[in-house]
Length: 225
Image 1 (cartoon, rainbow, N blue to C red):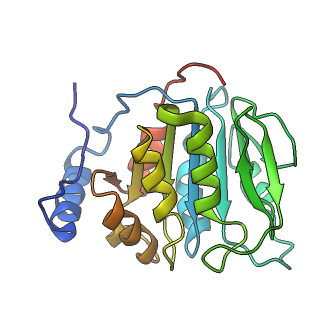
Image 2: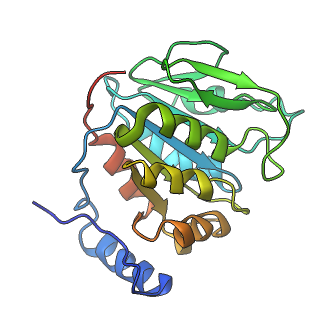
């Protein structure tokens, strides 16, 4: 079975990234999930459209795992990620609604100006509480609440972004036995967010966008929510 590409605490981030890049060049489809998942959470900021555009279209129509996504969008924005991606994707895309039960095979986007949370009864909830890391919606809030609900069955993905939101949440996922995936910083439009995540999660899988899409598409469902 191909080995998972994992970074090492003992090696510097630059070395880990170069090794990841070399692996990507020679074995682009070699990283496969070893663990089954009940849910996936994704966080992105600057560069999010490009990053998500390389990942979400890879998910098959019958993808069995729910996906929750936070992108930093200005509160006043009328920009719709659902409208942008739906024609390019096979999976169902929705803007998350308060108290909505989480359904398999659906990608939920946090609406502008609301935190997206996962309740322990596997419903979504929205909150207008204060910003976290100058952001609402907050990646940390989604990741931490999802980790509390799904535990070892959660995969967290940090993509391109210009701040450190998501690092604390990804750390919570790892501490609860979930899996962390981080976009290779050198391949990100803004490397600050992937780099911040790797500082606190040195065991994360470090992958390029195409590899992340392939990795997620190959994920198999664990115990149903």
